[in-house]
Image 1: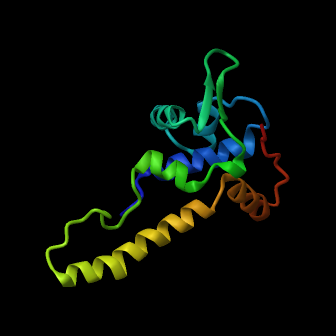
Image 2: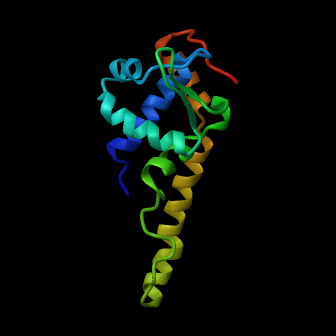
Length: 145
């Protein structure tokens, strides 16, 4: 498993949104400029995030995107799974052909998959915003609904 650009940029943009929205809708062009990501690419990513109900959008001059829930309720795993699909190194429903493969599947691949799930599901956008604020010395407000 390798996280694609879509997953990396999507997670980055969601953290940016959590840090900078301050309760107001943010235009993708603002996020794109700050994160040095193509607006067209972010439009595709945010379309997926909107359909998954992780963000809400409003069209028009005062429009943009806002988180659909509190940052503490949105996990990195939620975002990555929506953009990447399952985060597995080997599919859980893999058909093993012999006992050695079954043994490896149970003792190695399954444990790696469980570890990945555990990590990405334990980190919220709020955690990432707090870490950002500590690293940058910023007192940026976080958006809550």
